[in-house]
Length: 381
Image 1: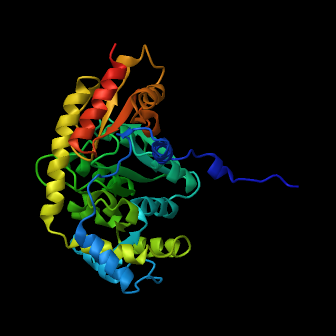
Image 2: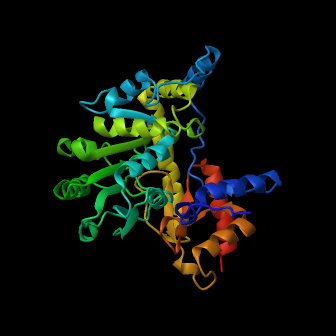
Image 3: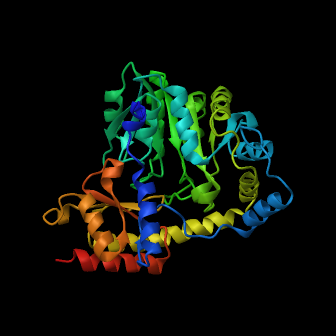
């Protein structure tokens, strides 16, 4: 009998470290282990009642059939209102931001073509590029901020796109307008696409409004914005995200999506519609609470690790060098914390940041404090 063959493009990628960790935590809790999850980036806020009501009403009204591949027209129009000059033809609704990103790399990458990705970065970026036949080119940041000269140095004839993520996962860094303008100018001069992953744009704690590359009109012909309802509205299980881009890009993504997932869950999209109609104060209050948690988590973390104060999202990246004599890697340190402290954190290796751990503060303040107390008890000399 012929041996089972798995395509090389699948064998060359690793499973998502954060997804695997979620499964591990579920198994531990099923066994009765009291684990504090400071690993997974999932808001602890409840989904707003208006979103639940709209989703439930859609189910009761039989809105459970196939829908348009690109998303409900009303939802696409509503999303487009946030983007000056855009209409529904500039928006596609996807199964979370993750599918939008996956689709974009399928569109832009021929075999061996390159996507420039500043690191540390989200675990799936590089693997999605590889799945498209492309090559991720990883460029270190400078103090978690974009190093424009380093990015420029790696751009070559095979480069097709630059991917940025602000606020950033896993560092919590927010890129200032001048850095966004510089990277946009670099893309414009070299004929590159600029992909801006803005899954955490609602949770920017720097002064003033979040600065998106979309605010630079001259970039819009080569810019794709990717966002998600998951983080902003705590709708992680709904799996609704979107891309906003030139209409030709959206049309191509629709063709691809028609052969992959088809439409996003119909009744979940009705919940997303309701989310967009929530008073702005709802998200503003959540942002304020995350800032308060950030401040408390940072005070605890810097007493134990070297780390920078996050400017956005709900993570901080802690340097584990102080414990290098006890642990050979951050993977080993994270494993010890899970086994002995029953606290879950993510090793930095998953984000191209060895010697670090990512700590999520998407928990209530009491849980955050208990998590750090447990870590301190295990790590104290």
